[in-house]
Structure formats: structure tokens, C-alpha cells
Length: 290
Image 1 (cartoon, helix red, strand yellow):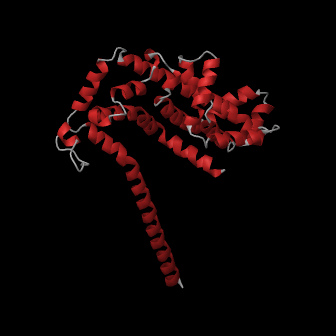
Image 2 (tube, helix red, strand yellow):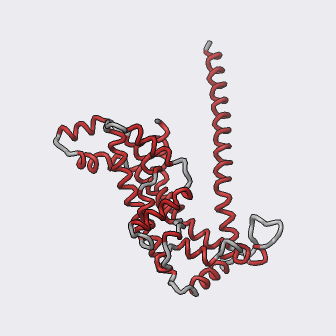
Image 3 (cartoon, rainbow, N blue to C red):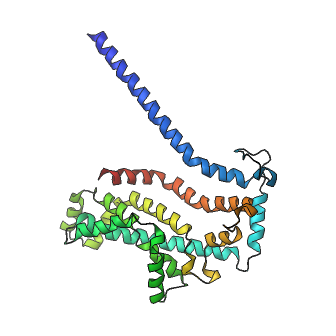
């Protein structure tokens, strides 16, 4: 009997190892497919001009050079608005839009997750519906709203539309729902107001979700491209400036600087993700429970 039990246990272990190997192989393939475009863009950014236009294109570079980055810098230095101004605009809009979105999404998610009120399910249904529409659908309504409120061609025109995006609110609600009601009730028994309960109990415990919302929102605000809301060149973001340097109508003309610009735009979101990746995974786990 003992021999049979050992044989059965060994068979289960082998099946477990085989299953894990298959799962990790699929994960590795998916990770590689996700990373390939990033790696290829970086490789193109350090290729000399003769290798950049080789056919068929190669995934390797034999003589790496930073000429594309130098050319991009030279092109940027000829613009009548300093590149530092575009960078300031981008950092200001991305930072302000991200912080406001994280705060207001958390405040709106708290009553949806932990309170009962008439129309709660209808409100949440509208929020979920907002996830199904592409941003282009809102361009015209946003233009009309910003025009009527006299906010066109201001920083507010770039910051306000991002504050009410549905994804952050959805993630925060799903995460806050997992917080134990007991700790909230204990705070109320101690005389804490709803605002104090929210800021002292809910926000600290929802830090992983907030970090995830910050990552998603910062990435979107960093790549802000709604130039129809901004007319003044001195208010435009780095993405808009790089689009002018590397025109989309003729990308081959400046393929090297275009790859260099893409790498520059990718670096901040990637760096932010590396810093908070554990929080992002934890939030996705909680959001998937419901």
C-alpha cells in the first residue's frame, strides 16, 4: 500500500511539474510578444541610417550609434518654443491630472462600495458603460463643454477631461469593496466622521489600488494628444511637440528620430511601472475577485 501511495504521489507531482512548465511557457511567450515592440523600437533608435533602411529589416544592430538622438535634439532646438517648456507642460498636466483623478476616483468609489443609496446600481452601470467607449467619441462634446466654460486653450482643458475617467473609479470601487466593514464600523463607533474614516482608514488600506490608478492615469496624461483643445504652442505637451518634429504623414523621412522620440516617451511610464509593479498586480487580483 505504501508503495502504491508513493507511486500515486509521484505521478501527481510529475503532472504538477508538467502543468507548471506549460503555464510558465505560455506566460514567457506572452511576455516576449509584449516586450518585442519596445525592444525593436529601441534597437531602431540606435541603428545607423544604412541599417535602419535595410530590407528585410533586422532585429539586431551591428554598429550602434546615438545619431538619431542627436538629430532629434537638433530638430527640437530649432523650434521657437523651447523644449523645456513642452516638458514642463507635460509634467504639470500629467502630475496634476493624475493626482486629481486618483483623489476624486477614490472619493467617488467609497460610497459606491460601502454605502447604500437609491440609484447606486444605475450609477455604477453608467460607469461601466464608460469603459466601452473609445476617447474619440468624447472629442466633440469635450470641445463644446470647454468652449462654453471658457476653458479652451488653458491647462484646465487638458486636466479636467481626465479627472472623470471610468477606469480609475471602477478599480477603486472593486478594491474598496474588499476592505473589512469591521474596521470602518470601529472608526465610526470611535466618533470618526465619514471624511476622517475615508482619509485615515480607507485611503491607506487602498494604497495598492491608488498606485495602479496613478500608473494608468499618468500614462494616459503623459501621452495627451487632444490638441484641438489647445491652440497656443506654449501650452502644448511634449507628445504634441514630438509629433511636429516627426510628422505622421511621412514617418520614413525621420524614422531614426521618430524611434528615438518613441523611446523617450516610453521611459517615464515604464519606470513608474517598475517602481509600483507589485501594487499593480495586487490591485488586479482584488479587482478580479468580484
